[in-house]
Length: 431
Image 1 (tube, rainbow, N blue to C red):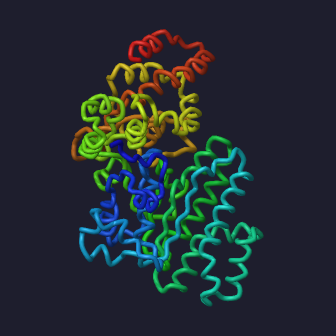
Image 2 (cartoon, rainbow, N blue to C red; image 1 turned 90 degrees about the horizontal axis):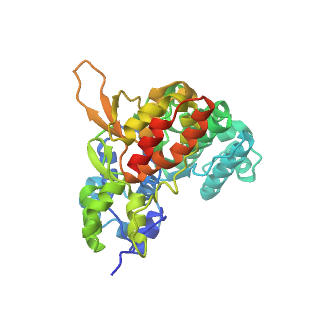
Image 3 (cartoon, rainbow, N blue to C red; image 1 turned 180 degrees about the vertical axis):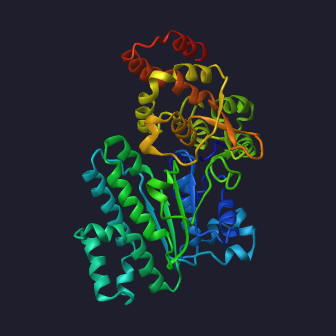
């Protein structure tokens, strides 16, 4: 019997109630709750590695409601972990906000999208208006956001304000979940309104997540950790766990045992070596990780075919724009990558988007954290900064370098009069 693959479903409740295939990632809840002194987590991971589904799981677990959702968790790791974890079940008001698809080409368009997101969030929690917990001024401010007439200052402080309203109305501090926080920032970097969107994001997130007495816990996801001086300068309470660290390393993507079990259930055990070559190769804190989107897409096909599923869906605009700026000098390095040689470098876990066109180091960090390069930690002296060996993770991503990257580089490097012969030969030899 074919597996019931939840391709493109990021709603945890829908996935579980339909009995669709689910790899248990509720260990994220256990690890999160074990860190009692950690107020806010930032968990950057590449696109389509399960961030939205995980936040949806957190919401289902934490959010207070009259309906009992324990059936969604009873066979998962968090439920068997004991009462210390279950006492948090359905206890808190939850603010869930995603910035996915906020990527307009102008700041005016971006601002319109942002205000509509906040308006929808306030509409979702409009029951606080009937709780009698808001003052007359607070009710007017709430109504202004609902009808779209609020001043910019109200939108900047909207996250903090809503948490205060919910805390007062329920008696419990709020859980704040922010998905794809950096998508508008990527768009601003590409389209020339980086300063404006960074100013809004800094204010919005700081009010909601920094020294907020109405906050119980916060979890923020995105692709990159934007440089501290750009956005997180006021958020020194933020605990950041990138894919370079062991903590939370198995909570996103699929591990080797998880894929082996999945392939066995699908009757595809014999294809394991091919799936490994195409979709394996990521290193999250020393753990071997598979691209979950590509593995599930392969299994969902009526006639499974090894092809670049993730590359066909992932957004490459920032990668393209950045690579074009570095193209004139990248030929030899890309050739080495395509020949499987790799190279060592020191990675900066903060990605300074405003300086990325001036720095090769920033480019390598961008490619690693976006999922286009694998980073393996290399031992160094006790007084030295850790280095990583960078390489192309698998055959799927190699196609991007040997195909799309080749086209971008040919056009760009031709303008600089650089000889592409050796690079093109390397590309052709490895495809």
